[in-house]
Length: 312
Ligand code: NAD
Image (tube, rainbow, N blue to C red; front, side, top):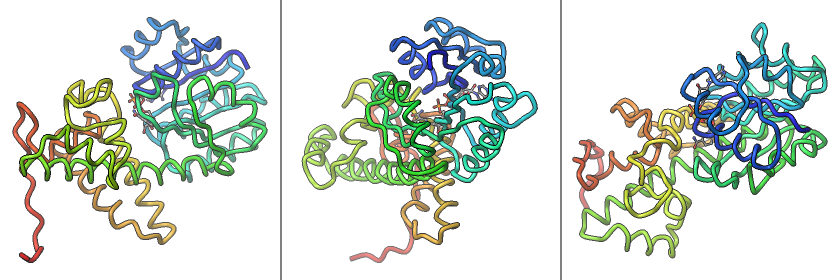
């Protein structure tokens, strides 16, 4: 497979496309946003005038779109990717959506002679740029074997977790946990700083103790403690808080459907909902630190103290 159609050239799709180009693939791309199209063209992506035009010329189609509704429409609407792609084409959805939508779309595609993988990613924009994403793949092993050179151009770890939909199930489990970890991390930092600790020193302590986690290691939420992460850039770019909320709601739905306990997931989901309502939906999810503490130069948001906790 040489010629790749890339649909959705946003925060993730653009750096993923750049890595495909760097690995020698031809990339023909499309995005609804003129700004994203301009940035892609400046990076050497050949632009199509529609997703269908891109898909019609490609051996493989990759989608990196916001929501399940966007994915369903992009694939199945009249004149969409199914209609435009040639029989036998491999279509890979790397967006984060519900596994039920993936299963539905994959069944329609397969019935029409197309091949489909769900291959959501983890690692955020820093690792999308570095080409070191983690892929969680659902679908047939032979389709994954065909996709592997592409995925290796964009990622470092590739896991085959099951049939269609399993990739998205794994992704939702992961993002529920990463949301909980981010909230826990900002609360621990806020507690330390409020009691006189230096956030850099405290981070080093926790990184080398039982509180170690991804946010502390690679995606630090406190501005000024780590380079090349959204907290170093005013929380711009990165992984939008409303996308984190979307993923936590999808995880919550999955937990309800499978009658699984997700108490902390529910609580963290509510916190991201509040954060988005407070006007931070477009900021990276690590900006939830603003809810927990006053950052240098910024007043803290007023968070009501939890009610009903008895004094010791
Ligand atoms: P983004 O908003 O930066 O990019 C999405 C792009 O898709 C936008 O440029 C938008 O214009 C375009 N788009 C929407 N509908 C379209 C359509 N029908 N046809 C063509 N283009 C269309 O979002 P992102 O951060 O790149 O995230 C994309 C997906 O990846 C989401 O599902 C998100 O949850 C997931 N994800 C994001 C991150 C991250 O750190 N940003 C990490 C892992 C997974």
